[in-house]
Image (cartoon, rainbow, N blue to C red; front, side, top):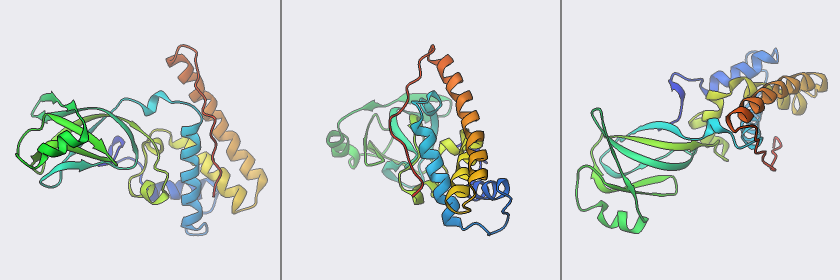
Length: 221
């Protein structure tokens, strides 16, 4: 399961690489994948660390089981799960959060519609076995995985939602660390800062004028 802002047709990781290369006038493979990948990853982590963003919270995600099991695996881009409902046609049946031990004790004893759930290590357990194709509606928060390979596998929500900022800041890091072009790096960072200012203004309006900055920063490693 992956989170996309506009469904599975959202920007892919390969398309994001191409945009970075295009904005730096380096089409083709003149910029190594690893360099671009690390810059994109750093850019997303940095943007998420700028503030406690409203647009990363209370996202509605539909998860469909792919096999007969008593659990579903979540991608690293899901930061927190706050609610789950079982979907049956147009009906939603909310599940109750319960201790993991209690849920797992019942998970192998019956097959059907679950009533309880528990989260452990990015895996949601149910108190019954569900069939392939079973749908659940989740309320989650999103975050970019700390591991680059996990981010590449399922392009994070931040890339889908804030493509302009992510690409500009990734270009800044590539220009600074690989191209050694400080002027281009500064130009791209200025573009990122303009988007960031707009995002802060929108966030302030949504929070009634209050911004919650994060004290952590990231560097391209």
